[in-house]
Image 1 (cartoon, one colour):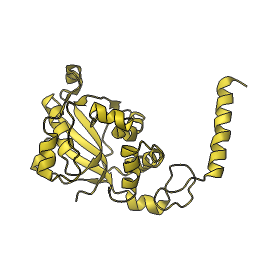
Image 2: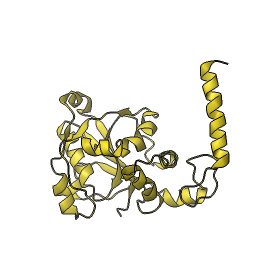
Image 3: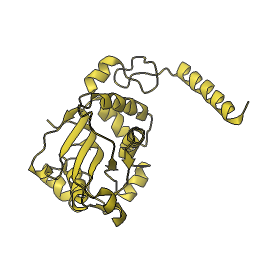
Amino acid sequence: MMEKEKFSFIKYISDSLFDFLFPPRCPACSAYVEKRGGWCPACLAASLRVRRLPLGSEHRVISEAWAFGPYQGTLRSLLLPLKFKKRRDGLAAIHSFLEAAGEALPRADWMPGIVVPVPLFAEKEKERGGNQTEMIFREWLTARGWIWRDALVRTRATAPQFGLSAPQRAENIKGAFSLTDDSYIEEIKRKSVLLVDDIFTTGATIAECARVLRKAGAAEVVAWTLASDRQ
């Protein structure tokens, strides 16, 4: 048996044993499901709400913003451990949720292009063990032909947005982003850019990132977020 085949066989046995000892369960109700990361149909239907978010004048640099589900509920319980406890066990459920969300997107004519994640400050990314937005979206989007570009960098640490009012959030994040370097200008210029983040609350962070991309020459910026409670 070749080394690669041997490894695959061992992994199959170990995965089967793990599933036998710890059967996969729905992340919302804990009902048994067929595969790890799967959802039961009822809970997936309850959490999946793909919708275009209403935008105000403070978001004028964003052409459209979409969220795939409400933040309060199961998505919140999957995101918080990922962001603050370095737990990756909820990613499989998030990725299967994205698969379902992709099928529910009403804009079938969206063609793959450039996708840029909202960045973390370097120290915070190191502290968290990575950027949760990249963990959520990168594999899903690049598998569908999107070109992932870390074109934005956070230039300074900012206070946590939690607990701040909308004006305070906007002021807190103002001027906190720039292009990673000028080499991205030609790639972005006159293009439609997809900006991704984990949560859309007031949209201050996404708007500030979009402002930088538009200044660099992007024709439009469309935002996708995993979750939002914005009505």
